[in-house]
Structure formats: C-alpha cells, structure tokens
Image 1 (cartoon, rainbow, N blue to C red):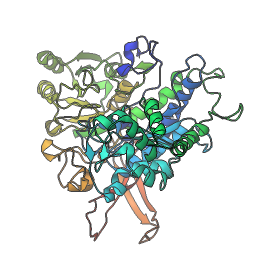
Image 2: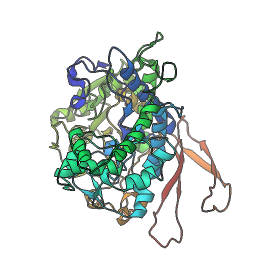
Image 3: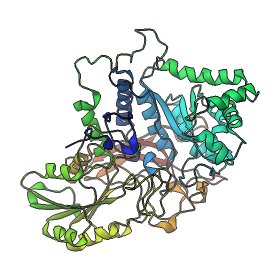
Image 4: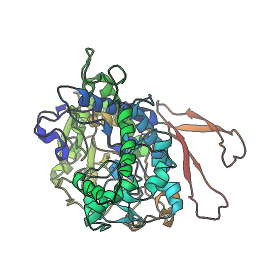
Length: 595
C-alpha cells in the first residue's frame, strides 16, 4: 500500500489547493468503470460519500477549501470509442446513462429535497463527444435524436434525479453554440424544470468570440449568454457584462432573472440558513470522534466493492480463471505501470493506493513467487513468462497519455482535448510475445476506452477489462483473478473489431449505423456483454399486460437461478424493439436492467 499524500506531485494536473500539501479524497474507478457495474445502488452511496467529503472540506475551519457545487456526473453519451473523454461517460445507451445519472445526482444531493448535501451539476450539455476542434465544432442532428438519444440522461437527471445545475458545452448544436442556445430556456428550464444553475465551461465566453466567432466582442457575448439562461461564468466576465448593462445590451431584469435561479441553488445548500436549520452544517465542523471520511473502513470497503463490480470478464476459455493459489508456485506479472495506480486527469488525491502488483502479491500469498517486468525489454518479458506457471500481462492506455496537455504520442491513447487516432492496441505486440513464451497467459486490459483486441480474443485463454484510478485497483483485480469475487461487470459501449467499423467521428447522426442501437456490423464485444464464473438459467417470463397504452407501462418479471458452483451477481438486461415503425428505429433499446 502506497501513501499518496506525501508529495504535491500526487495531484493530477495540479488540482488541489495551490501551494499546499494535496488533500486526500476517496478515489474510485473512472466513470466508465462505475458504469460497467450496471448498479445504481452503490453508485448512489459513492455519490453520497463524494458529497460528504466535499462538505467536509468546504466547512472544515482548518482546510477551508473547495465548494459544494460538484461538477458531476458527466451525462454525455460515448457514441464513438475514439472520443478522448470516453472514460468520463457511463456508456453509449441513454437509458443506462440516465439511470446512473439519476442515482449519482440523488446520492450527491441527499434525500432531503429542501436541503442538499451538495449540488449535482451535470455536464456537458449537449452532445459534447469529440475533443479535436471542440471549441468551435458543431454537433449536428435532428429533433428526434435530441429527444430520444442525446438529451435523455440530462432530462432524467432533472426530472428524476432532482439535479438543478448543468454546464453548457463548448460545442454548437446545429450551428448555435450551446451557451447561447434557445434550448436552454425552451426545453431545459420550461419543460424539465431546471430553475437552478446553468454555467459555462471554462473559458467558453472568450471562445464564443474567438472560436465560434458569434459576436464581435465579449460585451455582446456575455449579454447574449445571460439572456439565454447562463447565470454562472467559469470566466472573467464582470467588466464585459457591466458594459453590456450600461450600453443596454442586457437589462437589470435579465440579470435579476439569472440571479434568482442561481440563488435557489445556494438556498438549497443552506448558504442563507440561520444556525440549526441546515442538516449538513456540522459536517467538517464536528468530528464526533470519527476519523475523516477517507480514512474510514466503510469508505475503503465501498471502493473495493465498486472496483470488484467494475471489472468485466471478456474471455475465459476452459475455466482458466479463477486462479487456484494452491496449484501455483510462480506468477509473472508483466506490463507498464503495474506497480502504480494511474490517476485520471480529474482525479482527486487518494489517501493510499494498492497497485496491481501489490494486489496480486498479497492475494497469491507467501508460498507463491511473483516475478515482474515492465515489458520494455521483450526478451526479459518472454523469459520471465516462460519461468512462470501463469503469466499476467497488463496492457492498455495511460490516462494522461504520459505527456503534456494536448499531447498523446501513442495513437490509440486519448484524453481531454485529444481524440484517439485508432482503436488498435499497440501493446498487443507485447501480449503476443508473452503468450509465445507461456500459453497460459491472462490479459488484463486496464483502459479508459474500448480496444480492438482481435488477436487476443482469438488466441488468449482469458481476458479481463478494468478501468483506471481506483485506490483499491490491485485488491479489486486480485479479487477477480483468484475467485474471491465472481465478476459480473458488463460493457457499456460497443467494442468494434477495428477502425474500419467506425464512422467519421463528427457524424452525430447515430441512425447511420452507430452504437448497438443502429449498427449492423458484428462487433468484437457487444454492448451489455460480460462473463462470470458461474451459469444462470432464466425462466418464467411474465408480463403484467399483453399490450401497453401510449402513456402506460407493462411490468416484466422473470426468475433467475444460479445453476453453477459459485456465488455471483447477474445483470438482467431487458431490451425492446419497435415493430412496424414508419421511421428508422433502433434494432434494440435497453429499457430495464437489474443486478
């Protein structure tokens, strides 16, 4: 276990209080990994913990840091695996992403509708799913896809999750920049009831002038944004808006209307409450003898559970997994950064980390020798694999591309501001070398994105996928590899079998063949795919009614029985299909799931 608060370098991209030691926070798998749990209940608990820690720091007189308007969750849809911020999305399906968005918003804000623990600010509205050129690009699609696909998670977050805050995206929709788009008022406020906060993304006011070229200057731009519904700028704006008011481009009534909505959020957060009214006022001020939240065993247990649930078993020929400790003498662990938990760009600073190497060593026990190499020397890696009973090769991406801002030297890597150039894994060459030396090779694909690992799927006996960033990464992976947890994670995105199956990244019309809903291509791994260490039988399907009215609902019930030898979770997925539609409809649509 490694202490991560010893050096300011532990803070990704310089996040945290300037000039001070980084402040620890409970650190979980990337949002993509949380999505792969397909489990809203722990997600609600995770968000509750995140909101609690935000309050703890905000109200603690010693730290006096941060705020309680939390920019989460990301409700964007990962319609293309090359999108550089794929790791920030729960998945490609609007119902799945919407359901998880609702759970996160509810957990973050808490059960009291009048008082919030923290405010859930969803981002990025709308269709912000390309990084290259995002400051000026336009995501183009029609009203039907707006209603049925791109806006669904946001609508659910407002109507079901209770969120009253959102961030407008950098991009345009059909040529109009989102921070001045009429849809903010016409739909978000009037239809979905967002009477709260609508903010810009960082620097978006300036980009409205320089990138989108929508106005001659920031004075006109700030006035238009306020009239459109923006009431919080992540920008310097006061001088520009003051001039706009003086010149009559915006009125006091416009500003009052914007402030009224903003103040409602602060009221719900207890900012104007007298003593004794806000139920969250004691967090950070009163310890009650408890350790800080990130030091509590309950927090560690929650992270480990989330990490366990986030792992997806992609292949397991001849029951290669789980590993039997009693039959192993030597394990080779090979791959870059196997002794380091790689933190995401927006990660907090974990109080500790358990690397993959540490987790495997601990789980294997003292009687098993664990050899390791970073894979940079192919001959060394092959020799190590040849000496071992089993080889575990860890490949994937670096969440920050192991490079500076806007730089991704490896074509298959991506991050904020950089889209991927390919989905083919360069490190599959290392996998081939290890497999040639030891046919009992297990691939651990630790990645933020889907990869076209066609050779691995055809040749290796076992493959698991996990995402980055969890402080319990090593424990979670070891739990699955050694059978202490039977994997039940499911993919939340289609994994194509190569670049040839991909449409142009700026084609936002998914009916052209994008996502599992409209694609006719056979993927490497389908949306919702995932194996486990046991088998299940489905029987007794029942419907509450043979038909459903336009405004009605039908309840579906089914019995699920574990028919194998191991305890395990199962995710039941329910899809529907529109028959006889006169317009293009999805081949399948997820409309229910239960874990």
